[in-house]
Image 1 (spheres, rainbow, N blue to C red):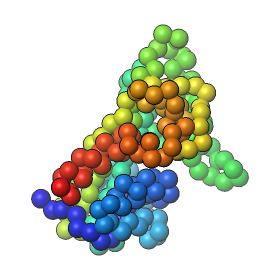
Image 2 (cartoon, one colour):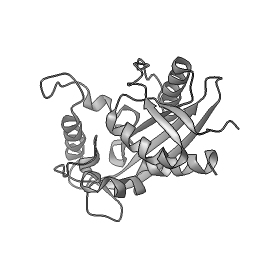
Image 3 (cartoon, helix red, strand yellow):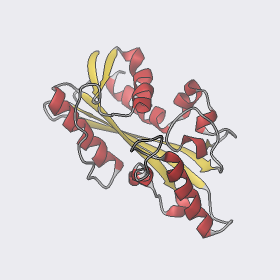
Image 4 (cartoon, one colour):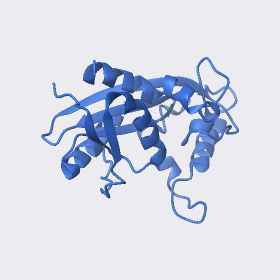
Length: 207
């Protein structure tokens, strides 16, 4: 199996929040992380129908373009009562609306869409949900590895907290009463879906 060695690693994202989380998780292993956005790499079309497919598309595109190992994450919120939606289309639910004077993803709108669909199901609808994360590593020679993680929880409304990003303000992890957006970043890193996937990556790549 191909393994990561200390040195440069492209993080296949243009999302600064995601880059920050991944950089913090990889810091102890000598990885010098730089984002695809910092390198000016284009974002490939995410045409997969699973988290793994989309993560691999992004990782291979970045590895080929930069000629460096690349790590991509595809993650999303899955709501049991909505048949696992938004799932792999999590970011798409936040696309449409411009905000703060410019185009971009409106996460408040996306959170409202989830809540609205649950409301249509009635007060007895389950609020069980989970964040899923798939990490894919690709090397310039085409080698690849995939690791999957999950964080279970429930949905709350209205959104609470200012830390975190995406759907964090409506996600309450099991065993807590605070949302991901109310947790100190270090607390979130310890229990998140990304942390679960990273624990598997670290065991395979750095053990």
